[in-house]
Amino acid sequence: MSASRAEIEAAVVAILAKQLLLSPGEVAADARVDEMGLDSLGKVEAIFGLEERFGIAIPFNANEPDQPDFDFSSVPSIVAGVERLIAQKTA
Image (cartoon, rainbow, N blue to C red):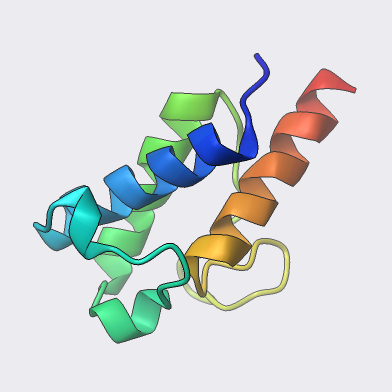
């Protein structure tokens, strides 16, 4: 499956918005996850949503959520990570 950066960004924003009980329009394209108030359970739910949406496996350790394997700190970093995982899957 190939997705454009815009499609990935829209999906990331929509999934984060759902976890934050916001509309996608309330999540800025450059938003930082911690500043939006997403808790650890919300992060895990968002990761599951992204994995399901794109058919990828995101390396994530709930005990160490800030590990460098996948940068979940901001919308752009999540988009870049999803792009990388999709590229690895299709390579």
